Amino acid sequence: RIQDTNNANSDFKIYSPDGQNHLRIYHQNTTSDLVTVTSGGDVGIATDNPAAKLHVVGDSKLFGQVTVGADNDVSPSASGTGQLRIDGNGYTGYIAVDGTAMYVGHNASARDLRFQTNETDRVTIDTSGRLLIGTTSHQEAYGTSALQVAGTTGATSSVSLIRHGNSPYLTLSSSAGSSLGDVNALSNGNRIGQITFAGADGTDINTHAASIAAYVDGS
Image: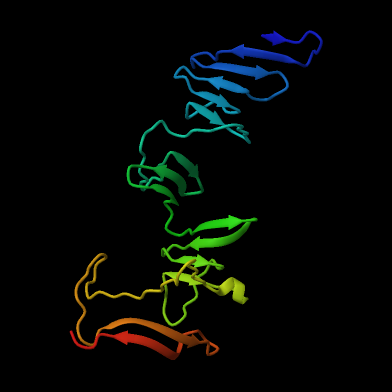
């Protein structure tokens, strides 16, 4: 028992509940234990049943460098494992590092991955793996796309390529193979690439207006 003789309401007690082999710190003005140390070495703050080496219930502040992991690789899995794990309602977010890459993601099939500045969504990777800039919902425009930039002004809906010292390149490439990395030769008449112009008709933006396309002529 620790008591401040100048303050009758400042009475701390350190005790061990019968049969639990736990050490607990209690204050007379609280209705529950403040700190619990289990026989296995787990420490709980504001919880009497810690499930990890340090288990804190409530807001926390950390100042200085925080290191997660101990020079060990952790590959993400279906359970959402990683060096840093964030438990959501029915899913898990994670940051993980292994010998292949650094991963930022989650294990939910129905949630996007979004990046914000000033509490505003800027970049979204949706549940289909599409990269969306300026929007969180893909809009079909003459078909679907893996990358979409959307906005209401030229500045928010334009893409620019800048190369200092020479000209930049925009390359449209094609292979006759159907798998990633294939380099199967194209045949006569195969389309190599196409730029399409489409306009809205009041229902969608799937109306073809014009195209610039390149095809193989010969072999």
